[in-house]
Amino acid sequence: MYDVAIIGAGVVGGMIARTLAAYELKICILEKENDVAEGATKANSAIVHAGFDAKPGSLKAKLNVQGAKMMPKVCEELGVKYKNNGSLVIGFHDEDKRTIENLLERGIQNGVDGLEILDKDELKAIEPNISDNATAALYAKTGAIVCPYELTVAAIGNAMDNGADLRTGFKVCSIKAADAGYEICSENDSIKARFVVNAAGLYADEIAEMVGDTSFKITPRRGEYILLDKECGGLVSNTVFRTPSKMGKGILVTPTVDGNLLTGPTSVDMDDKEDKSTTAEGFARIIKEACENLNCIPFHKTITSFCGLRAVGSTGDFIIHSPRSGFINAAGIESPGLTSSPAIGLMVRDLLMEGGLVLREKGNFNPIRKPMHAFREASDEEKNTIIKKDAAYGRILCRCEGVTEGEILEAIRTNPRPSDLDGVKRRTRAQMGRCQGGFCMPLIMKLLAREMGVPCEKITKRGGNSFLITGKTKEEI
Image 1: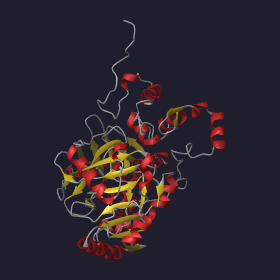
Image 2: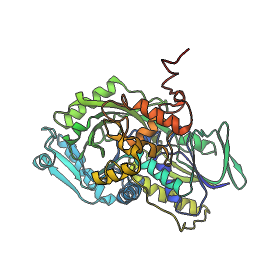
Image 3: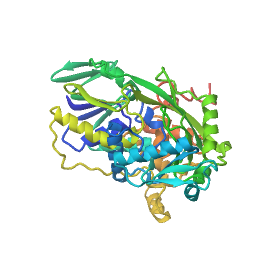
Image 4: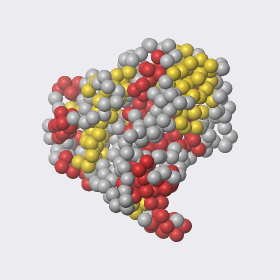
């Protein structure tokens, strides 16, 4: 019997798990996919929002500002890249200017520090490549960027290093009362837990219905992105938003913590919770609006594109409550969910305590995790010392990103352990460069196969039936 079962291994589930791992509890994280961070977490804008957009008094407003203040320390402890680059909301006419003024007032009410309105000259001074048609901007000095899947891998890994269990490939089919708690069943397995936290993202409404809660619905919202080469990362230093609409913050342009340039997302409500296809129409909109924001974006240097689905709740706010004893929803966590995730972890902890969970601090809890990018950021002298101890760190497998065999092996052997190519990619950046794995993919497949003790034919791109090969082409008959 577990004390707490967390359904969903995205950034919200990960932060809840890490928060609870500091206490003497038996914790299990359940994830239907082959790896963690497979849902909305792996395909979003990666922005740590300052907190000026959410309606004052809402959970979004409260947890955004609290989470943004927590994020630097959380990232430092987990060895995750974090950059306080600032953000801009740009306007082009008088109506935009009024929206910007309203956002300033809203931000002040929400408790956001360091907000100011810039005129055209001030805006150009800090972002020379901004559109010549922009007339004003809200400047948020506390805006930042982070890598959402790196944060999730690190948070869940840290929770596991402190005793939490992770079960992937566990698609919850039913939840029923059992032994002063709940029995959570998949097709082939089941676990029991005294408390259950529903952090299932797009499927949170379906999980809630399993315990009789029909108080909300989740709608998937498509968001397409275009990612440009690292050569383009210096085009802009701040995250640049347009003035927001009811569908979101529009097409943004932002650097990433790894030096690329990211543009998007589109915003289209969907019915299908699995449709992550990209569209020509979506890309056309991104290119058009991004080029209205900034001058001379070199889209011919695009290296990849992708689509994510955001979990939009029917209430208009985060849905964090306990509809019945021992069961807590952490649902409808759309933007600013990434920013809010550390604060959501604290809120869920407090709700569990109010529901009767006894919390005793763990004396040997270790909040520190080694950075996944430690070798790349080491000095040449430090690298040479490492290579003398383990020659695998001296063999570069991913030429585009400069990732070594030693780093890939370390990732495969570190919690939470990847079992497919995309899992290795999220942990090491191998396959994320210009060739998108064209050179290093076969080499990584061999390492995964060797470490897992399976033939290369069993290695997948992202779990399920995403197999890459069926056998050897030159095998003797």
